[in-house]
Length: 193
Image (cartoon, rainbow, N blue to C red; front, side):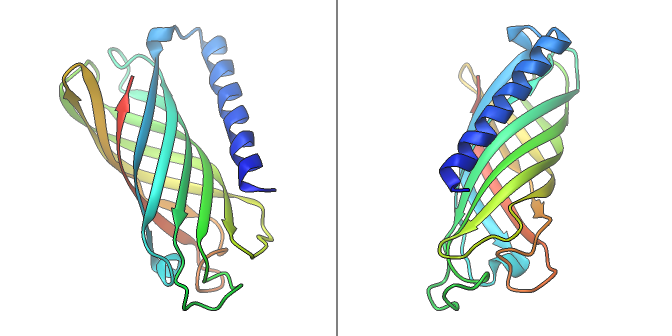
């Protein structure tokens, strides 16, 4: 499966899940918060042995009224690219540029109301599709988990956020060691609307 088809698949699944949850739970448009974010994906541990930080893009929706609920559901689609070291062994899992397409469902715990500045915490599970140019991924889509924190803040009339949510991939594909899960730390800044 190519990266383009994986992105399209995750987009359809995410949109369908958001629509079904919205319909099933009777959420109004005011209970759905959309967000886009960009930043850097920082590879750490064995996945970062022959790769450097790269760009990351995220789009998502959070379901639930922030005015009344401090625990809400968030659905994210995320894409990141980790440039590989050209000195690494060509065609190996540890070398080459690593692209990741991910879909996550997360619980967000934060302050209720509409404060101008407030911290929040994220705990999520998802599915990832990893690809390295010229290397077949024998596992296909795999599970991933994340836990981290963010800070929301107001800039003019818009609500912005900054977030650090380390992500652990349940696969050794792309790492420099067998049976060693890969970890990437996304550092993002975004806007909610």
